[in-house]
Image (tube, rainbow, N blue to C red; front, top):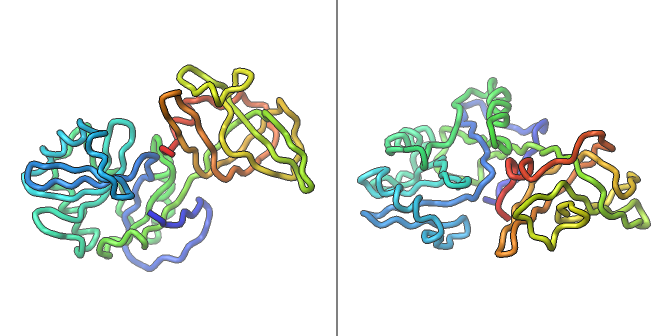
Length: 264
């Protein structure tokens, strides 16, 4: 979406109004178009990905007899709709408050659902952000002004830093600090090109002036975990890690990554 992510604890300026605070899903942003009985599913980059999601395509037809355009997030085998810009006619110029009313007219089910959200006043915004960030599988919160027409550039995205316990796989001393490659416990289904000593090597190295040795366990906080899959299996990469220090905890697992990963 191109919207800057603001991490929890940061301060931003917001006007005195009501807001929709939504769960920030860790999935794939898509748009579903239904025209008559024909359904098309598009990626954020406007690529037609309909054939990839035949169940979502089929079930979308039962949401409404009217044509519609809904936007949301695909997570595993479910779709969470957070907005609607067309229902029988264009409604993109309506306020978000009005569009949510139209969104609720759809016949949601256990595969296609409305995104979890709270409507809140400015003074209760922090509590709502905390609520959204603590929901299962949440990667933070998205804040939208209820009085605005559709304009994703005005949305505020709050990210949740993800804690991981990793082991140092490789250390390369530099002029200033050291560059580190880290990993976690591996498991079945992992691309063997990304395993070493029975560990899953996490993509993207990082440099810090803190000194660790190969085999040390350390705790890091990362902004994003990207999930990559091809015919040879799965691997993962981490984005912008912050190093907390050495850790006595057991290493993070694939399950920990899956709970917080986004398709890369």
